[in-house]
Length: 434
Image (cartoon, rainbow, N blue to C red; front, side):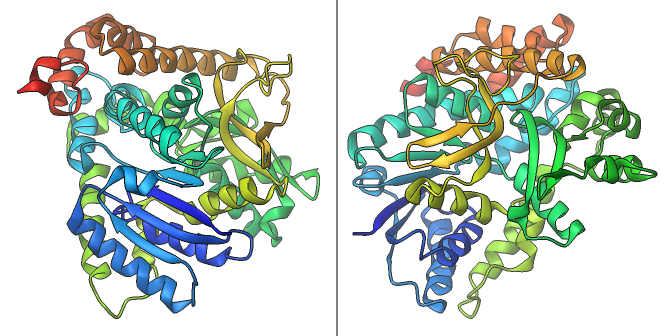
């Protein structure tokens, strides 16, 4: 008997990436029913139409269902993939443009913007998880691709749900290095350590041999710096490849100056790309994902998501970078620098029982301090999102290294909450009843 896979946020322009990944793995991932769930019926019809043409084009034998009914989508599911965006790109635009008015970076997953997104998202995802527990098949997996992934996964696991978080940053690095060295991706193993959107590659092993010294030799550090957006000297000092998001910590003042100067925002760019993509998706002759989708920011999304789900199903035991508990409850920790309950982003062996993290060497002090500070912020963000307590949200802003100052956090928080009022019923219960 085949599997039922439900995609929450199926009207996303990312969905064709996922469709491609599922179709390519039909031998390992025998999905009988694929359900795309979305509250936006128009987008669902557009994206679902392309998904149907893609699946028909490869002779996929399963059944595709488009629905706006949450319970129907979750009932009997074996896997629930969550890729929603509460408030859409309009909320993201606020995340990017409001914080700079108060003297701090605006970004959708880090800093104050990341907190706003977490406050909007965590309650919705927890409600979905509770419904999944009631309606899905016993042992069903929740795979979270919704940002901020680390915070959302922390909330899911703290509530005892069977969940794994996933990001495409690590697989993007892996594929890039595989192409550089002319090998299959499976031969490249990363020593990827840290938190979601706060990670470093401490080694790039090809067939077990670390090639990072070769990558960073000569002008290599300058090339890596230009690639990821962090200073070349940081690359040399840490002898690592920082994730793209570390530039917000290493170059805070410079990025803030650019944001205050105005002009370009990623949110506005994505809105334009999505408009163009949806126009393309409407074309009844289009039966494959368009090249423009790569500019949307979901590179290798299909590979990461489909590979994880396939390995959870067949227990292949391959190593993938995922967001999971740091400890196994029996004394072993992936990162010795954090408690067992902390959600970290590290390599793990994927089996039917879940992800088994690979033990890593301790973080260097310059990494450890930043990771521990951001982890404290994430714990406070989860607590604030659960309770709707402004005091906890204010503590989260103070703990976040990108904000960290009372003179910024204290006036910023009420503005941030007010701008998101319609999406924060736990902070504005009276407004939710109006």
